[in-house]
Length: 268
Image (cartoon, rainbow, N blue to C red; front, side, top):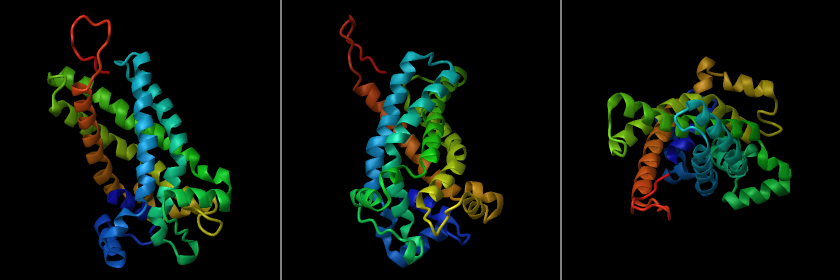
């Protein structure tokens, strides 16, 4: 959560600060609790968008050739797009709550929690405003599902083939998820920045495409990857933990096929 907030703030900050400088400034100015701004929206987003993304991908890959990487990319794209549609409102509230402290007082929204934010967006901006930045959010969701889920499965296949590792070893799961996390970050970062700017934009701030482009490029070509360090610190560890835990749950709590003659767990 703290790295997610730092990443969002670095995308909006006008001054060129490092991740550490941004964190220290935030703590000194607003206290440690400010690192968890938007926590309620983040939790709602994870419970809906992330779980749905994984579930749809796992179901979809049962109906394609799981050894064909292009098939997995297709399934990941569809899964990410569908889950992205569900997660847009909570992601928008989360983004706005995270960057609110860095905006001028006249631009702050001051949402109390995710449901207060959702209600106020509908009342003040209309229902359609819940899907502000939807194109970028869905595109990012598709890319992150490709980068995490499809790349994780493909990495497992490659490591099994060339490194002769045991299929259900924790070491295999760890290095496969590490590879997926490292590939995923540069894949989604430019879209992450565009999504963030679109979701926090107002009639007075980042209102036009030209203004967004100019603002994103305020630090030169580094603007495409602004907040990259914070994204790596967030996404790589979370990807490793997520897949290692997932694999352990799959191995130890797999269900049984009724027609199976042997009492061997069927893990999917």
